[in-house]
Length: 200
Ligand SMILES: C[S@@+](CC[C@H](N)C(=O)[O-])C[C@H]1O[C@@H](n2cnc3c(N)ncnc32)[C@H](O)[C@@H]1O
Image (cartoon, rainbow, N blue to C red; front, side, top):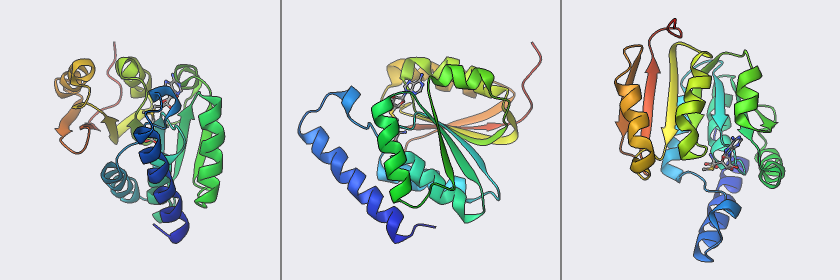
């Protein structure tokens, strides 16, 4: 559900992002959040499945988490968000609480590689939005947590095609997956899982 609390926090974060970009704040200090249209897309996908278990890699200050958690709330799911920057983690907690979504979103603070290596949880939907050069390795770590029917959305595949064209090509060439580049905003690679992790 997109209630007033959620809409208010999303609007504030959009304004903060606009002001930081206008002021030329360095990328590492900005939230680097998704576009609102991408947020609506994630909301729709997360909201479509009862009890959806969402994994977000790269939570930043919680803007995309709020879209995902608001979607997951519709049919009773939840979001686990991974973020390693302590300043962003503090902002994530404040923003998710202000949106009234604390019950539907959990932050795991620390390096996503470490977190993914030790988790055995299975996810229905993964949103990948960390450092572009890490996508391939993060996808590889996540793959064993995905069952048939799971979805993976990776952001920036068109805005950072130099780093991510190979990511899209690998997903589209994998017979255990079906994958398509969605030309929305910065470009989303939408990948559907057909089988369990293939034996190696
Ligand atoms: C593009 S931003 C995410 C924006 C967020 N998804 C949103 O739309 O609001 C990428 C985030 O990933 C985090 N990150 C990058 N590498 C990470 C890692 N190895 N472990 C945890 N977080 C990481 C960064 O600190 C940054 O906040």
